[in-house]
Picture 1 (cartoon, one colour):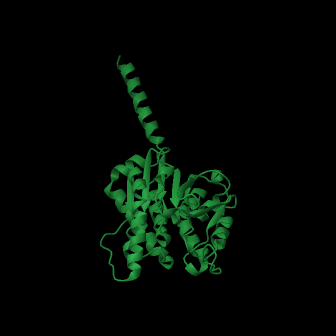
Picture 2: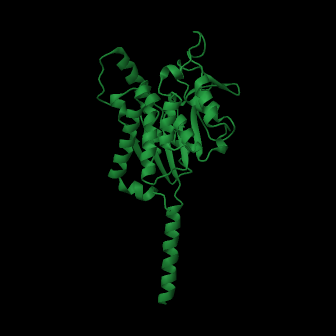
Picture 3: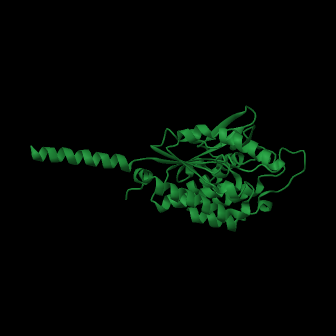
Length: 285
């Protein structure tokens, strides 16, 4: 009888361990311009705690960082690519066009970088499951894409800041930045994941000063993006806010290393304060 009970106990424990090992981890990365470089630091902190997401979803800069990570680039490699490809210089990223076009800058630089780093241009050929969020400007709806051979086009569309970058036309449809309607697209991978981690680099800062017209405009834009991120935030099991937004803004590309550190610290501190997250998500060797 004791032998039978022991066997049953072993089966139960084995089943529990197997279930724990099969936990599917998802990571959602918000948009936020240069503030999105915090995502690189956040991912670095995750890996240092043996947490390796299998599903990635992102908007705008979150889509750019997410696609590179899904391709297999490690966080520190992505950080070095920012330096190597001069992605920290806004003048290198923007190629001005004539006024009257559907945007002041083309996507030529971003597309060239992606062609060099991800030559297959396919969602299905990435090492991790990846989803990009863009805004369908013709219908006024958010679109999430995770399959097909137009990876470069949809990531570019996801980061097409209205008025700054030209509208991205894909199969006859006009797309712009996904952050216009959905800045934290957790909906893309919630059903596929047992645990969903969200990193928001545009958390709403209530006490930010209003001293200039620009401050009012930025507060209005950020309020809108915060509102369209609420559903995504609610869907996440864990939500990490990068506070780089207090010190820097969306166009501070040259401060990418400092912004990286904000993301790294935010994630490291969160894991320390929520040990259950590490226990639940830690990769079992």
